[in-house]
Amino acid sequence: MLGVSTRRVEDLVGALGIASLSRSEVSRMCAALDAEVDAFRHRSLAGERYPFDGQIQPGGPTLLAPG
Image (tube, rainbow, N blue to C red; front, side):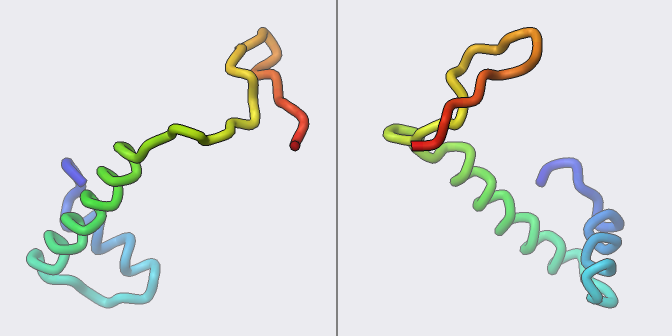
């Protein structure tokens, strides 16, 4: 999570009810999130179905019927 400050992470976890985090805890948390984001971004999309036909029209993408 490049560019995310310790203060911003503390604010986020504070909203979740965690009082405080050390810099090393923030670093470990961000490293774990970086690994999750990297795995998501580099996952294979082969065989995946998409709910639109890929054509963007003036009114937005054309949605396909389920099935």
